[in-house]
Image (cartoon, rainbow, N blue to C red; front, side, top):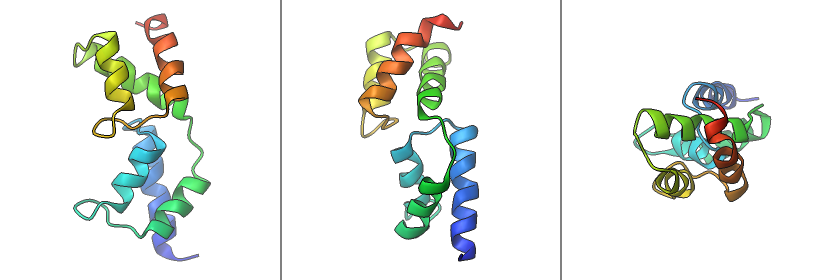
Length: 104
């Protein structure tokens, strides 16, 4: 296995665990020319081998948007789904929005 694949997986785990990124968000960070600049193959390997709970990441991102950014619920939903925002899937966003007020 190329060293690039191992470091991409490490970076992906950090993006998931610390920054609570979506799967697409992690891929975009890993392959960004002005970012990590990993090859698409290394990024795909990282995502295929990453143990991540994207529902939990979506919920963490939603809670952050609510508390730190003072966003309203529909604004949070749009931000989580947006291609310019967090890029979570509709089911991940639904999960997060249903549980957003369970934990304050």
